[in-house]
Amino acid sequence: MLLGNRLVRRLRLGWHRKWAVWLAVALGIAIALGGCTANQLRVQSARGTQIVVAGVDPKTFNYLLSQEVPNVFNRIYSGLLTEDGITGELSPGLAESWQVSPDKLRINFTLHEGLKWSDGEPLTADDVVFTFNDLVFNEKIPTSNRDALRIGQKGLLPQVRKIDDRRIEFISPEPFAPLLRAIAGGTDSGVAIMPKHILEKSVRETDSDGQLKFLSVWGTDTDPSKIVGNGPYVMTRYTPNERVIFQRNPYYWRKDAQGNSLPYIERLIWSIVDSSEASLMQFRSGDLDAAGVGAATFSLLKKEEKRGNFTIINAGPSAGASFIGFNQNQGRRNGKPLIDPVKSRWFNTLAFRQAVAYAIDRRTMINNLYRGLGEPLNSTISVPNPYYLSPESGRIKVYDFDPEKSKQLLLGAGFKYNSQGQLLDADGNRVRFTLLSTAGGTGTNQLEAQLQRDLARIGIQLDLQLVSFNVLLDKVGVSLDWECVLMGFSDPDFDPNGGTNVWQLDGRLHMFNQAASSDKDPIEGRVIADWEAKMAELYAEGAQTLDETKRKAIYAQTQILAQENLPFINLVNSLYLVAVRNDIQGVKPSPLKGVFWNIYDLKREN
Image 1 (cartoon, rainbow, N blue to C red):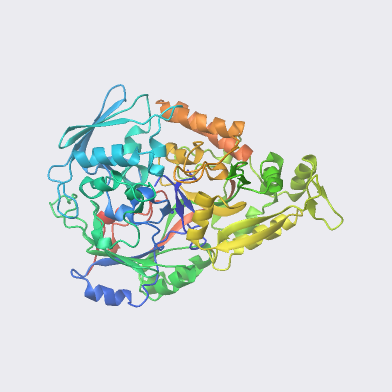
Image 2: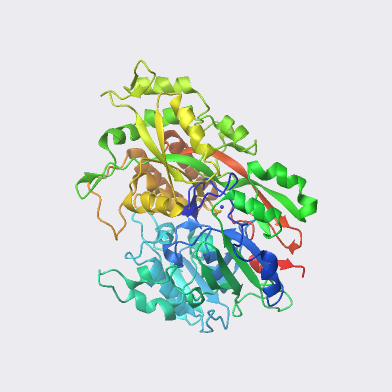
């Protein structure tokens, strides 16, 4: 899906757990180390092997509370199974084997023998049951992981029980096609297993405000070496605004064919970056081992491949793309409307949203900003996803650039123009609203500037509010204080059910008409549109349909319905390009899972 359960920081014009939200969008892999060069760090490495990648400043070290991508969790945690980033095939993870009942309602997992947490404590079936029953299924914990496991129209959750120390049974109340992947598909598509011996107390106790202590454990102020995991690496140090350092987990369960413990790479350095320019400079100087390649940097880097000892890999269409969306929530919080009622009427008028869609010149956007390395996007499921419905099918609505059609739609909906060509609503209010975006996301915020120009053609004044990534997350997901936003979703799933948290009416990423989370003041007067309710029904039906042909037909309906009603106005799907040093072996970039999804298999020449 283009829409996801994690927000992704925008770094440049090239772009990456179940639907992830990004902000315009880059790989998040290659950046400056601030204060210490990569070569210096290599000298300090105990085994001499490490990889320097890039990310954003972590918002939390609590896996279940995280909403952003990239994040630290696929480095420090494992799921019951492992999902191949290229084929989507499931293979053993923490579980060495699994059995699905003939009626598809029961799945039994058997854990590897002798599993341990990174602190050396045993990892058993108790940890698995705790993760699901006490954390993921706990309604007091606002986690997106729960959304993808809701089954049927009633949103029921599977039962989880311990058989013995190594075996666990999951029981579905109804047929649920994505059950196996949603439970066990790794840290992205499934659920990462969490340590009961560390976290159990935090879900039994509350703080002075009556909130579970779990909601405040493992924040970024926690010593990272105290974070207990089961993945290929453990965090050893975090310096805000500079770097996160990961060290090989000596208790990681995976071994190679010869019985050698994995991963091969001793250390991973995650450098924190806030601009694509810094990333490019550091990669070109040799201090970084990989870099997301955007349209503006492709030609330059292509000329330097031999000198820089790297190769630009084109993995095909990306699993994410930019979009703009309107806050259509008509509710009130503490008696105050979330959105100015005048603007809310505009945003909830279908002709208005469609007019804005026709007013955006995507081809110019692709040619000028993406240097031709992209295509218009017209679906809520991403191009690499096997359920994607192409416009060539003739079944999905396409919004080619047509400002005259925009004006006709607006006039037909009761809007009008004054003598200066400014758009007014039927009551004479000037049509003017604010676009929320991240400061410096594309270097100079060129995308936002083009959107201003495009909407000015049809008489709309678009104001910009450029904020930090974390401020944007708070506005979109907590305070709900926004009018229009530029961001995006990344889709690391092979099954559309990964995006259910966007389309469930109470989903954590149902951002265009967001319900209040359980830990916030309620919203009164929230209105659910018929098409919005239908989307939720279709996603529930798709998840309960076991026949793949019928499932594809259902998810095709969702794409048609979303593109007609435009909860998100899709912009561009870019290519997934990444530059990687030639001495790193085993790299298989995946548009759905990222460049180093198989970090445990990578080797590097000393």
